[in-house]
Image (tube, rainbow, N blue to C red; front, side, top):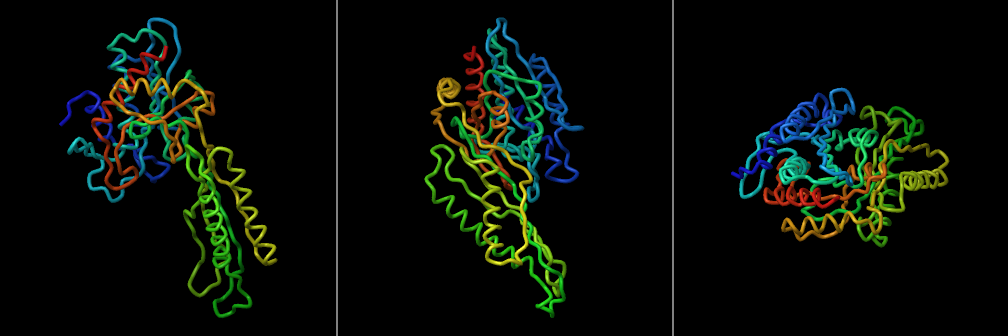
Length: 378
């Protein structure tokens, strides 16, 4: 068993249930883990502030001030996790073969432990110049209310979000849009086809067009960092009983966007599909609306942060590549608030699955690289 303080902290974090209550009704939420992190940050000598993003759901911010004025660096990670259905012992951290298992180990308590312990290492080494801010935020797995709240009160010259990147440096990622599509029919007894209009059958027409659109999106030349745009049908519901024509069908879909696209792009695509179907059939009745969206993000071209992170990573023994990420992160919120942000975190596997682990040596290298960046970002 690895006895490094960083891994001991990581075990403590995994052992705390922090399932996001917006995802799982009645879940524990981030309150208990926030309390534990605040106490730990105080023990290692940081000034600590709590910021409630929602009742009982606080961000924790620790600040390390250098002896001289200089630039500021924000290390940011989320402490909420997805649910634990199907996991035998999700909050029992077990280490085997340099892997630490448990819910949130990879996504992303490994990165959170690394950034917190990087502050300890930086402080112990005599943090000379500038300001290091460590932010443990809530709700990234759902709506990122934590990051949204954070940027209303805290700013930095640059940020690293410690999502799992296999110790590569992420300089951009996709965005997304959630869209509800509703088709409407006419309820009638199943024996009276002339009276009924089948809303589910009509949604089938929509699904055919969406599938064709997805194929078209993925056949385009991919973005060099983010890859291809895409869409998928996420949740569908309709009908009331077996012997009745369904008068309503609701599809909830997700469109993943790349640079140059937005939620407006996704909405226009769906509206065009519905307009074409209305033109084919005047009785076709449907509408759509964007329910939630987040933009894609890229570090500004030519910004020094990726190169600085690469040098710090190399000093910790990491052969880090500059890459783009497929998944959305809070870096887009920070970047949108004027904080240039990159991604750097440990590797592992099983995020959102029933067997999740983080690579223990990666957590330690990540910690050392972040500490080196904190000392050099002056």
